[in-house]
Image (tube, rainbow, N blue to C red):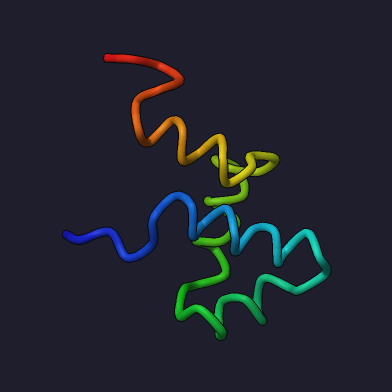
Length: 63
């Protein structure tokens, strides 16, 4: 199964949530279930896009 959103996009969506949008609104706008947004919040809440990008590039935790 293909991932639909990158980690950077997920963090961007969560920033919209922090700005005051509801999970129901975001779900409609981005085409995901509100429960999915809740799961993303549990995993990625508080991260910045730059941290996710660096982690994705393997620079923060080299393999």
